[in-house]
Length: 129
Image 1: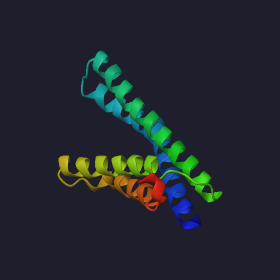
Image 2 (image 1 turned 90 degrees about the vertical axis):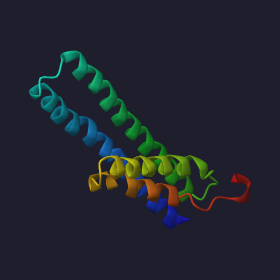
Image 3 (image 1 turned 180 degrees about the vertical axis):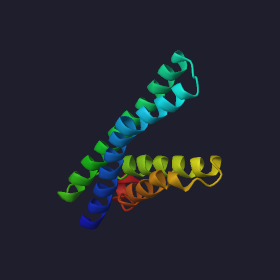
Image 4 (image 1 turned 120 degrees about the horizontal axis):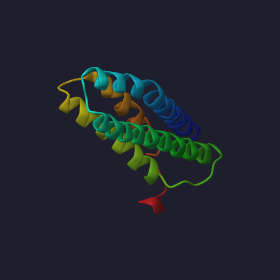
């Protein structure tokens, strides 16, 4: 159980740190690229809303994952379903994006932590199933 907590905690911390990098580091670069390409100010504002929502969602996913890892670390019963759903969705997003981008392996940054988060919850109790 401790090993699963560590895997889930490390993956969740990675997601949380990625959220910060995505919002604070990624958006300014994207905004500048859009402005340089001559994008309309309304489009840039709309893109900002979506981009920063993604950053916020990533942060929430990381926080929820850290909470689940902490509870499991302390030896308390925790339903595996939130981490399975969260990690599975994160991994599937990465896989779909790799396919859509025709092999852009950068998106493994979603696949690897997603699979780790899901795997950290792989063996829940019989009452969870």
